[in-house]
Image 1 (tube, rainbow, N blue to C red):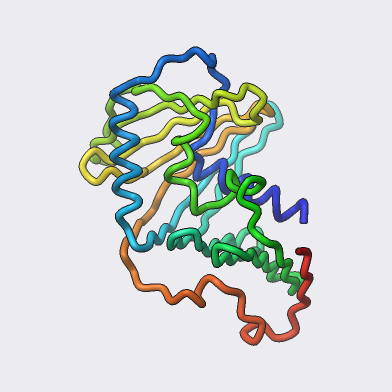
Image 2: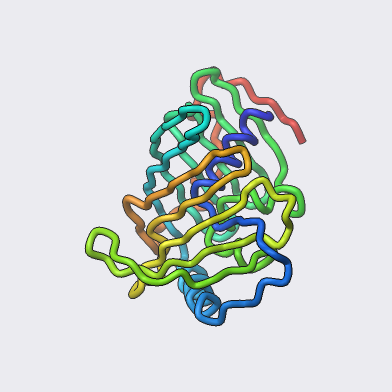
Length: 223
């Protein structure tokens, strides 16, 4: 269970809209707020979001440099996360989370605890900045010929493990195209969206684990 939780933490760090230990007295940057509000408004307008992404983990002190890929589908409070490099697939219908480990053929079942797991829920990745963070406008750049806004995020709570996030937001579509984060342990994460499809049709049962489709799976109900 701890292993699965750590993986979800890493995904959220990558996809991150978290972070940075900044002063609690930091002023609200009106330019950054305008951009983030439009990002949130755009995101909430979609019936669903399907993302293919790559993410890199780097820790110079420990000589770590890893790059992996994954896929995430969001629909309201439901999500489905596919991380083949970890041999893991997570399903969530908004109330129940199924964490399926392909190699072990095991599936852990947990309830969604809003207060405890909100920060780990991929359904919140585009709106997490709305509570507990200050932010500042860091300028404009071009990524592969695409003009983007750059916004830095800073958590008000200085005890957070994550210490900084930098978001790259498409100027015309108001979609995140890249996110970069740093941890106190020296880990830095870089998430890049390879593709994003919106308003695709997904049945509600797509976000539920169907035991019949996985012969021989061991079910562990941990609720």
